[in-house]
Image (cartoon, rainbow, N blue to C red; front, side, top):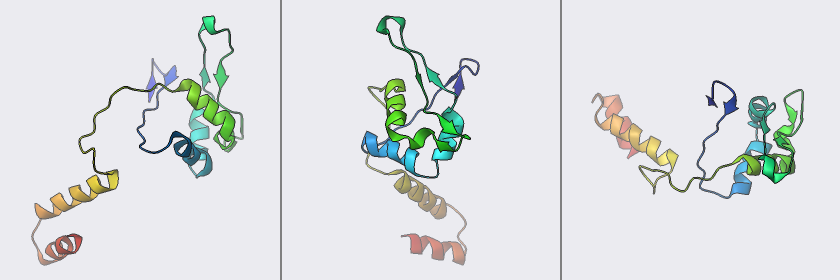
Length: 126
């Protein structure tokens, strides 16, 4: 989401696996094009007292090549820009997103129409 009147971009995520494999998904899958298009012109300024230059998103080629595919510079960029939270809320900490969605579909089927087709689908889901 854009914040500060469109001056900054904020990406919020929660991932339960390894940090490295999570970022590999951005680098290796088709999502790399979207990542490049969104972040290609972003820059992370450093504090003056650190004595370092800021960090730019890795260069892209026509917005679709390189960028996040350059895994080491991409991971360095992410590492520099991330803020770790100390706490977060999970309504169903023992369920995956797929489980939550399937349970919601089951709930909707139980409280939905009771025609023969809907009942058959409900029984198959169970």
